[in-house]
Image (cartoon, rainbow, N blue to C red; front, side):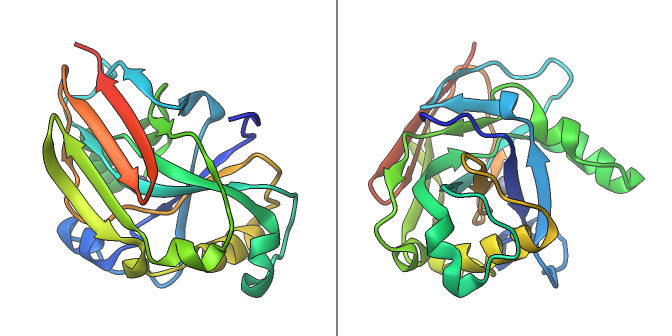
Amino acid sequence: MTLVPGKIVCVGRNYAAHAAEMGVERPVEPILFFKPPTALLDGGGVVTLPSWSDDVHHEVELVVRIGAEGRDITASDAHRFVDGWGVGVDLTARDVQTRAKELGHPWAVAKGFDGSAPVSDLLPVTSLDRLSDMVLELAVSGEIRQQGSTSAMLWTVRELVAFASSRFTLARGDLLFTGTPEGVGPVVAGDRLVATVAEARLEVTIAP
Ligand code: ZN
């Protein structure tokens, strides 16, 4: 990644089947949260699990990069503001997140630890609409745990860019994690994750 992101914008519950497995309502508008730039593990590699969580989950996601600064971008204009795509894993300290939800606290700690945002090398965007029909897959040590299609997203990349930019400026280099399909589950030390979205591929090893 030649650009260091100023922010990593993430979307919660963008697949109905994942909202259902979490036992939560389908949202009425996109649920956005941030990871800090220090969460990025560019190109994949080794992630050390945080000592303060006993239940870190994998969430395979389509990731796009913002190529030009914009605010109040319309969905029909969004292709002018997205210049790269790839696959990422939104690593989540689920036990910490569950406690935060119960207490009405933010998700920053559960979602923002170092290495919690591994992202593959990015590919150039030729057509934003192609991103709306791609297969996502995540295997843990050779076993497929998550499989889905971006066609099941509640909000498309175009709609997410429009919504996010209606709330804050999107800057060149920002990354957008677009949500995970069902099948999330724990990772443990020694696991080897292979995440793919179409031809984008990411490998992550969980430090023993
Ligand atoms: Zn996620």
